[in-house]
Length: 387
Image 1 (tube, rainbow, N blue to C red):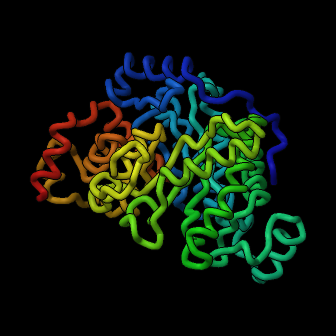
Image 2 (tube, one colour):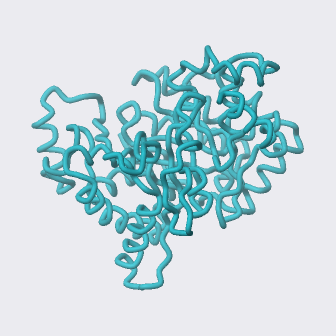
C-alpha cells in the first residue's frame, strides 16, 4: 500500500550537504576526501553510498534495510540508491522508513541525496501468475504502455510508465522530491529494436523527466547502465554520454519551448570494480571537446556525476581481492574494505554504491569512510603493477 503519511518536503542542497560533511569529518566519522563535489551544484556527496537491490522480499529484510539506511545517514553516508522494481517495490518503503528514522535523529532532509530508478517492471507483490493478463490490466489498460514498448518482457520505456514509477517512488519513500531519478539499463532495448530506435524512445522519456524537474518531483536525472558505458565504441550496446546529453538538450528545449534551456542530465552509473575496470581504462567516448576519453573522464569533462554499481561484484569481492589490490592494500582487515577503498579512490568516480541488507556489513563501509581515499599516484600504481 502507498504511504498515507505526509510527504517530506525539501531536497539536497549545497549548504546542508556541506554542513553535513563538515560535521562528520570533525567528528572523525569521515576522513578528509570522503566527500565528492556534485558538479556545479557545490553539494558534497559521500564517496560511498548505500544500495538497496539485494535481499528477499520479506518484512525481515525490509527492517534490515531500514536500519542500514538510518544508521548510514547518521554516520556520514548521505547517498542512498534504490529502484522502483527492487524487491518488487519493497525497497522503496524500506528506504522511506530509514529516512524518517534518520530525520527523527536530526539528519536534515536537505543533507540526504536520494536516488530512484525506473524502467524495469515493478511487479508489486511478486511475479503474477499470468504475466500477460497482468500487463494488459496494469499497464495497457492504465495507458502506461504497450507490449511493443517492452524489452526482455521486463523493461518498459515510455514516458507514462517512468512517470508512474517516479510517483510510486515518491509515495513509498515518502518524499516530495527525489534528488535524482535514473533510467535503469535502457540499453536492453537495443538488441530488440536497435540503438537509433532506442534513442528515439529515450528522448520523450527525457522530456518527461525535464518536466518532472520543473514540477519539483525530481531534481536531476540520468541513466544507469550495465554494458552501455563499458563496451567498445563500435559495440552494439555502446551508449555515449555525449549522445545522451545531446538527447537531453533537445528534451529540455522541447519541454520548455526555449532553445536556450539547460538540461538536467546530471548523473550516470556503470558497474566498476577491480575486475570490471572498463569505465576507467577503455577510451571509448568522443567528448565533443576534441578528445576521446574513458567514461569516467568523459563524465568529468561533461559535468556528469558518475557513480559505480557492483562495487563488490555481487559479493565476490567481499571475500577475495585481485592480487595487486591485496598486496597494496594489505593493511585493510578484509577484502570487502579493500574493494570499497579501491573503488572510492578511483579518479573521476563520485560515489561507489554498495548493496547492503545486513546491518553488520555496514561496519566495513563506515570503517573505510573514516580513512582517506588513496592518493592518485598510489591508486594508479596498482594499474602499472598489473600491466
